[in-house]
Length: 262
Image 1 (cartoon, rainbow, N blue to C red):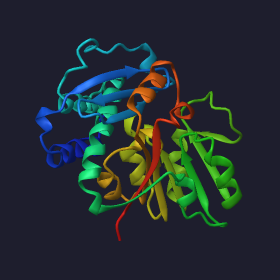
Image 2 (spheres, rainbow, N blue to C red):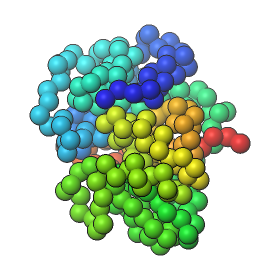
Image 3 (cartoon, one colour):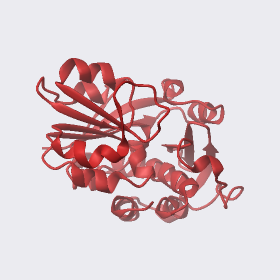
């Protein structure tokens, strides 16, 4: 499950967040769609709960002790081989990342309240690979590109021409644009996927789970990160607890797009 990118994210957090040893986790919600972690400083990070993979059969060994724990200690769960722990760790990394991003805004070009797909360069002759089923993106891409391949691990996703994610090794290297859901960080496939992107003109990591320090992704060829910044922690955590997903978060967060500064 863990990989180089997760370990680099943890290293960035340790280097770049002041007074890290004083930050604690104040709330953890593990919902049907997403897992949320709130810090003692108010920042919230989330991660897809991945019930369609193996998490539904897991228990969290540290349940009952996560709230109040040191934020860095909880973030390090992202480096676990237990998927349930990894998800909590990634959500904590996302919460801590909000501090790091705000501290280092000079490194990035950040836009809010716009959809990532509207800011990506997709040409009429392009082949686009979408790794993970992102329903709102599909009609937009099909209007712009010559070919769209959708690769998805969950066989229950309802979409025409769905390919298994095992086809990534064949499809991704020949694509002009690659769009990868942030859940690839949580399920441990992001490192190998970025190695496949080769000469793709645009490589985007998107979704609420992709709300993290972008540097390790840019280093490996990603051109854009499309995540969220939580603006109403109470409302978002309530939606998570009640089994909600991204459509239920719209009044509790802002879309955030990050590119490298030129």
